Image (tube, rainbow, N blue to C red; front, side, top):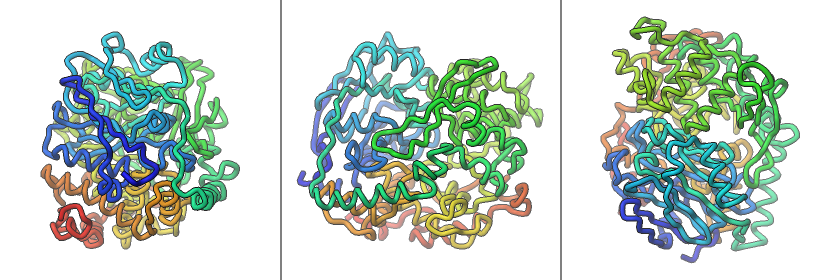
Length: 601
């Protein structure tokens, strides 16, 4: 392959036979889909959209982008791409820390796992070679002890991407966790690894940053990108809220909009939001603020619990999404308990957003007497900690809740109390207060998600322009722009927060300098559109259409609180606008659009 930036090496690992083969990247695919998310979805699509998510035939892809491991600011992300056992859709989940850079330094753009090992194994990666090694002694261990044992075995620095007991037990929202407690969190990536008897991927590498193809262009592009990050009021390390308070800086402003769902979204403002906000956490629990490869922002807030039953516990990091899911949405205003629950998620290997939603749904089922037995009351923090363990181990009621929010509610006989789309629970922005997120949740290719197209950048932060969060008009068109831009940045793979400062022009300049292939800002958006449409085409082939682009009835008929007290979601109107912008026919990508984007010929 003529393109720079890539290691140009992919490992295909057949866990059933134990065979590992190596191949170069198809240059045309690299030009069309770039890497990480985009190229991972292409590999997944070629593997066959109709495979069962939990079968050996499903593919689990660990993918880097062409900027990974370089000097590019915020280039420390790795995409895990697979078919989700939670949603049965395509999914990709991105992990921070140092795993992505080390995988690139070890000589790989991607690792593609298929099949199922007869007994537990882990993949050991070093110097362009992948070996499968026995993991019988690690099976049954949590993520933290697995990391500790493998680092003791191979030394540090060492990246360990592992599942905990949740993945081993097939919890549908199990995640993959690395040594920095960064997670490929959403969609059940850990459950797929568990179904394959793949305990971990271990990467040993020393720093070997890839060189740009055009050094002079790179100096200009890198300087410009870094300056936008440092000068931003959101990402600047001296003035930006993310750097000082972490992502949980959003708790108070979103709550002021009436956008913090409370008690399973029965209300949309939380009276105790200040108690679990980023400001309070920094003041009372902050221990340190570590960062990822090539990132000056340092948005992670490591905390230490100083008193109470969990005194002495250190964990990273207490972010906005789990603070909402395990806090406000469960009527839990104790940040120490939230930290304990996040630590459980990191050790057992579970998605904290889904866990908070499934517990909240269980609490509402208890409230409405849909549960036989004691159930779980709002704000019962001891019960929350116990329930989290039961879910990871699939014991007692945890076995039902391990199926996820939607399936769990269906087993109670009341699917209407599941705040989920396509089987995946909603994140921390109530769609009655932020209409861009309403259409975003409904049309996300991986189930309810704020990261496919992060419209709160505009609705809350005014980036690139301020829009009225309660107005639905124009949000479908706005969402498409965000979705396409993020699909490209996810394919580079740059941190999503880079888009608080950078745009298509900065991404294009960095790509061109490192890879050596010309690209314009418009072409950046076309690549993103191609990736998003390939994902949608994958889902269409799995039977999904516009009827699945839905929202829970609560958001459509029950007004919110505070500024959203008269607001419900105008979903039909927004879907019509969005489909028109996309050129889709009732949620399905027509053949003409596939041809236009070069997905088919």
